[in-house]
Length: 302
Ligand SMILES: Nc1ncnc2c1ncn2[C@@H]1O[C@H](COP(=O)(O)OP(=O)(O)OP(=O)(O)O)[C@@H](O)[C@H]1O
Ligand SMILES: [Mg+2]
Image (cartoon, rainbow, N blue to C red; front, side, top):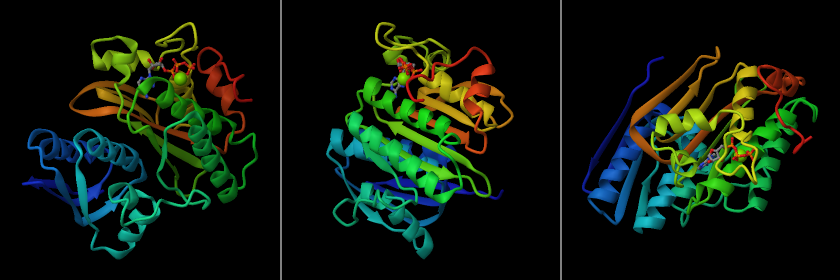
């Protein structure tokens, strides 16, 4: 693939060129950090005129960080839309334009079955996000309730973590994406909270993400089982899908083939990001996911 991505930042203006995806998010958040947190410009021009493409998964962490900067540093954004017409529409439909400049752009419509980024701040809004994902998938693919049980479980666990653990002042942001020509659904959830290392009380941020995906690891054994991230990661692996947990400098990745990697990244994300792919073509996923190691505790959903 011929991908190109570049960010220029100067005097409160951030210009983005090329293809924006999760792997290029660091460059953009670093530029935002320099202009807002270090140089303290109160008005930021976010110039996406030369943006060529964008993936779904980069949107929740990006808008989460943008809203966080507005809340903590009182910044406002002037949004220069992409020159490319279809891409301009795509940003509107996916809800990104609204979360950059809410005065100019309406909130995306949760009733439509196409994906859009959704903010959630309460348990009730978590359920709304899960419902929207499930209903949209049911409407757009020929799948039974049993086929989407694993997806429903994972979405509600990952969004629940934001409300229960993250202390994010902007709540969480989520999006789903159906991978073309498959029934694999990718969900991405991001928050700008304290991060996994802090809640688990582990100093090493790479060690913290590696621990968080282990069975039974939780910040509170009295109230929680420590199965949400473990189960989601196992379901993604059983789906032959990718899984990623990034929190501050720590990152845990599972590739399509099931290889796992843990890294200490140079650029931190100011909170936590989870990407999880679930294959809804497999109605026995929960049984198979559980049999990869020990059985999962699924009694909360089914
Ligand atoms: N978004 C987040 N922000 C900060 N910490 C998190 C986040 N998500 C998970 N964690 C940390 O990782 C731990 C493990 O998460 P996991 O979902 O696996 O278990 P749990 O939420 O503690 O229990 P369960 O999901 O079974 O109710 C949490 O206890 C918390 O310390
Ligand atoms: Mg949990």
